[in-house]
Length: 444
Image (cartoon, rainbow, N blue to C red):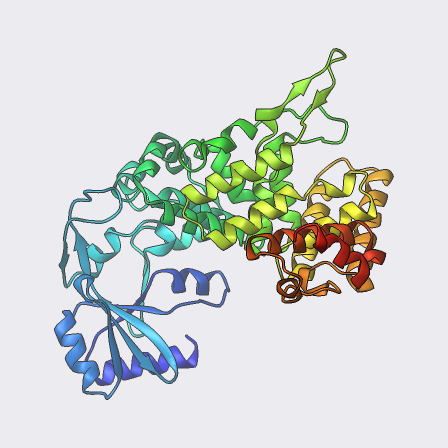
């Protein structure tokens, strides 16, 4: 044990409070990883735990008292300690109807989800591993405690947790657990959108999210998370620029992107509209016209259903809407208008667009021409931003407050400013007072 944890054990022992380390921290130690959290469990009821730790002068928080959990602060770190418990029947496929405290470590471990999370360690008694968690770690296997169907029926979110663990650790799903995940997939409809979004976010931010995303498709889970994604799985893009089906192309794009939530969400969803907009001409050539704009709208609806914040939704929609721009023949005026419309911070959002475009490109059968188009688009956009050319109303040579003195009614001032900016975006040389005042006169 690390020295701080040994010190916690010594503290608890001095207060005559028997305790075991439990859960994910033991899994991480056995894998040679640094645990994120240290959780303890004890046979003592919560009132006894509070009394003994209060006597040590520690700060305490009731972080989950009805489930027997207290948090204490020791040497600058927060630790949770939970009374052993058994769970009653699960009424909503997520939480037990009741919990009862017990003095049995075995009963406490029996209620846990996966064997790699169902171990306990006592500094004198050593490691308790009743379900073979160590062997499953050695075999790189995610296996349920008890019958997989029962574990998933109790808490359907365990379907996604198991897949996240597999993706995070590079483990394989045990066969019966994998079958149960598909069999119980419909129970995900009973899980709150926020919980689904939280697990999806955690998967996307893994160092290598590809395995978890593959398992979502393999276990046929997308119909219960975002049904629109189901159509992309196995969808042949019939394009010389793509060697992967639409779904696996998007997975590859996610893996090519940095661990930025908005960029990875955009990478995951950027071609979601392709099956919906796909057409072929007389020669059998496939086309996906405006899939970026349709895809942005579809992504927005998905993220709204999953209760992502409006800020995240808007950013992802903006990225998807712009992910094809480097392949279009845009004039300098078109680029200035695009940059003017970008939400601020403009430079940061441009970089996000470029990162998504690069991730998309690397997931495709790219050619020298497409690499050149991307490099040229990047250079042109950055040149415009560094040139100092006007992109905002505040950059105009005529300010909004001057319009009142020109006798322009309040209802027309916004229109006048927009007209002036449109002229300047078309030709920055027109950002001169005489030119702009002449435009403003039209609105008096």
